[in-house]
Length: 107
Ligand SMILES: [Zn+2]
Ligand SMILES: [Zn+2]
Image (cartoon, rainbow, N blue to C red; front, side, top):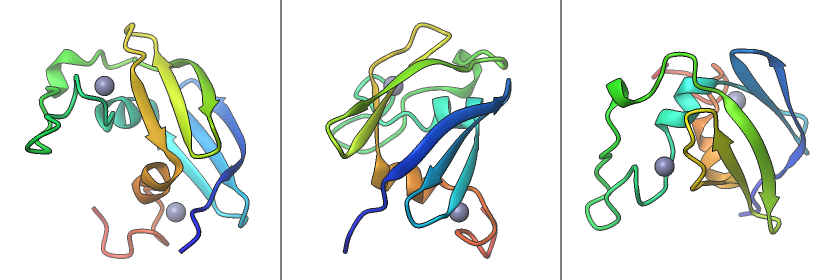
């Protein structure tokens, strides 16, 4: 299975990040949701997969301060709360897409 990759990434407003994928799909992520979904070792227990990051530790107005591509498979995001170790693979980002087409049952 080929993994979709982003064609464009931008911040349409102060609350969200938008990714337009090469297949034309568009994903709009809430900043805080993205931060809370961080897959790094500081946020998720590598052995159990359990999320150790607690929601109350994340400021309500957190936002990505910077981001850059890692190779051709992931996006590294540095957040305004100083957390910059999160590497979001395109696969993960695509699976996090909150749109109704990706999650018909809602989540
Ligand atoms: Zn993290
Ligand atoms: Zn989607």
